[in-house]
Length: 248
Image (cartoon, rainbow, N blue to C red):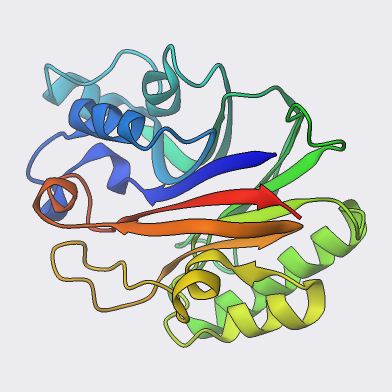
């Protein structure tokens, strides 16, 4: 049984430095990945000011706009809430999402973070696939707390033999989170498993930092890619990652 995944920090649908609305181009580009499940960060659920300012701003939330006619199922975890709107993480899926829950793991009021946990029924998988979309803090202390909360949640909510994917923007350039996830949960990073090291994903024009990850358990990594270069760097300040998995 094969499964195609992708993760992408979409920068709220704006180009690098917030110069242009890129949500329409982003939707076209995501569809070229042919992913079964996509993990998205910095997704705008609602933004009254942008809707009034930009004529091409979608009427529906960004996760619905991106999912339209391709990913029939989606879940959104609202993390940052402000007077004119909110944003957070989202998971888009070709398969039924049977349960979704967003856990607040914020460490202070100025940087709201959450863990979006979905259970997905994938045909021929044999059991429920657990997917967690994350966007961790910029500072190390916050990340330590959030990785601890992630590990506690997975040990509590996910059976040890269940297939599992944890993906998103970890802001973990020192790979401290990756070592904990491997030690405590047996997770492998898809790009590192395939290439030997996590991929450089930020900034997308000239990637230097290894911030974005796809961690898996119960799958073999067949192929893994980092999507950067001129066409992708116009869409966001992060590169996208994709992985083609086969059930072990």
